Image: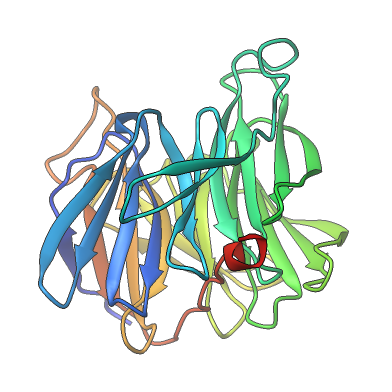
Length: 292
């Protein structure tokens, strides 16, 4: 189908990331990672606001008690949107100062198990990992040997997880037990290169297709569950970073982008939206209320 893009917000983020749709309040949230900021676009009022944090905001998710679960540089926190209080849940990589000196947390998403899945990244060595954080503050390392953990998305039945490594240039599929968070059956389904669009953030639709931001090629790629490329959608920015489904019918695809100083166009770093034919899978909420 021909896609019509419209700019949602001219925020010109350095690294715009992690768009999250809050259907209960009809709003989209996203982060500018290095500036430590979460933006909020309220569709009811057509207003843009933000919260500032003392560290990088690497990723975040909604909770079941109207807080946010937030991955900062120093760990995973619960954030009270009213008082702005931060409560540390866990530091997934407390050994960063020794074994992982250049690691930082990166892409994260709430899974169908009610846990916050969050990965890390390293500028050079494969020392990053993917973690599963539960509301009681327990953290389990699920995948190791990564460069840039990214692309987390979960199928509509909660039984498939997609995970990527942006610097590794691969997309993997796992079977997921939504009751326990156990992973099995790891399979590499695609290895897109620079020209095809290295995989950044991702999202699932209700047809079990995976939408991947091709950060190196100015596109969003739609794959089926086996990794077959169904569609390549060229977008108005050079480096889209993550798609997210939202809107009343979940048929609006939002996507964030970044600004590379040496090659930024006028629209780079902004947030865009477009209407699509198939609805997306709603992302879960972190079960923070269970630990209160």
